[in-house]
Structure formats: C-alpha cells, structure tokens
Amino acid sequence: MNIALWIVQGLLALMFIFAGSTKALQYEKAKASLPWVKDYSRGYVAVIGISELLGGLGLVLPQATGIWPILTPVAALALGVIMILAAAFHAKRREYQGIGMNIVLLVLAVFVAIGRF
Image 1 (tube, rainbow, N blue to C red):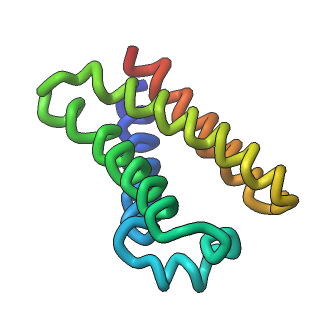
Image 2 (image 1 turned 135 degrees about the horizontal axis):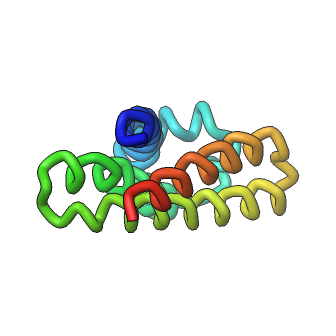
C-alpha cells in the first residue's frame, strides 16, 4: 500500500506542480491552452496556480523529509477541495470535458489523504 501511495503522490505532485507553475508563472501560455483563463485576471489565475503548486509540493515533501508528515494528507485534502471547486466552476461554464479530469484527480487525492492519515 505504501508503494501505491508513493506512486499516486508522485504522479499527482508532478501534475499539480506542472499545472500550477504554468498558471502562476506563464500566464500567456496558460491563456493559450486553457479557454477559461482569458476570462479572468492574471492575479486570479496566479492564485489558483500557486495553490496547485504548493499543494503538489505538499503531497511529497513532508512525507519524504519526515518534517511534519501530517501535512501530506492535509495537502491532499486541500487539493481535493480545489478539484471539487474546479468541477463546479467548469460545470457552471459548461466546460464538461474538464470535469472528468477533476473527478479523477479528486479520487486520487482522497486516496492519498485516507492512506496517509
């Protein structure tokens, strides 16, 4: 189970770090690849990106270093909340293709949260 948790944590961390850094640091690239970005300010998109970036780091670093490992499931829960909000956001905008990925990421984040608590 520990190996499965590490694999999921690593994959989620890579995904959130990549997606978060794009939103937080490369606004024009995010604007070109994500349809919703052009409707929101750079600051709004950056806050979402920073949240995803920190959550991705939180999935791995506390558990790997042994420094406050309780933060790993907390980060997983926080990312789960972000995915619920993202799914609602996409549903409101009728961007249904994005909701499937949000649900997959939510399930994986909940798996990590339960497994690490």
